[in-house]
Length: 240
Figure 1 (cartoon, rainbow, N blue to C red):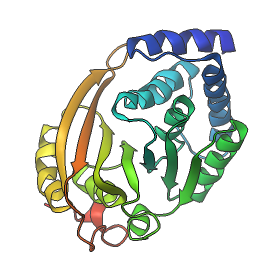
Figure 2 (figure 1 turned 90 degrees about the horizontal axis):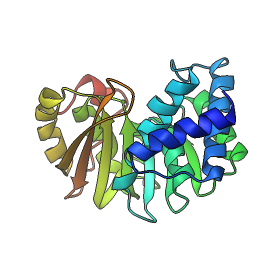
Figure 3 (figure 1 turned 90 degrees about the vertical axis):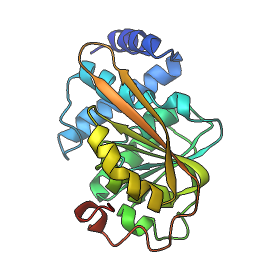
Figure 4 (figure 1 turned 180 degrees about the horizontal axis):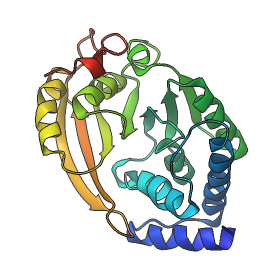
């Protein structure tokens, strides 16, 4: 796909979310897409490999949460994988301090290459299990915002995210649809971990049946020190 075609699609999709791209931002996203496709042949980063789908299901999807992020905040993207939503957010918002967390070193290596190639500032990577990172005083309760995209069920995810954010901070969970039962089952975990659901937004991406749910959880009290539990436990035994 030529950069002209890429730019047209990005701008058309961006209009539906009231997002306006600069030419510099378009160029960075274009470079990012090519790095993603190049490295995907070496390590498993994404099953989505058509440029049109990368634009919509990775880039535009990641940017649906921009409106919830206030200026000059410190954000951690948990289980970032190939960098979503953290890198698209960083490309659009130079004011945000972004940390990308992932447990696989190969993905971290890829992310470091993207950061250097795109010359992104105020962004770093951490290679760690989230359960270990959540116990580390260097990172625990050090962030204003925690984001996560399709990582785990909401009860488990709350145990990953809430220990990382400061009091009055926000968890932004990006999910699919039909979450009523999952949300209900997660309420106890969210309460125990010091959180409260403050907003549930549903939206649809352009071009067909691409429904999304965005769940915002505010931290209203400190997370008990025993959370997160040891690696693997939150996913095997969610709080319920």
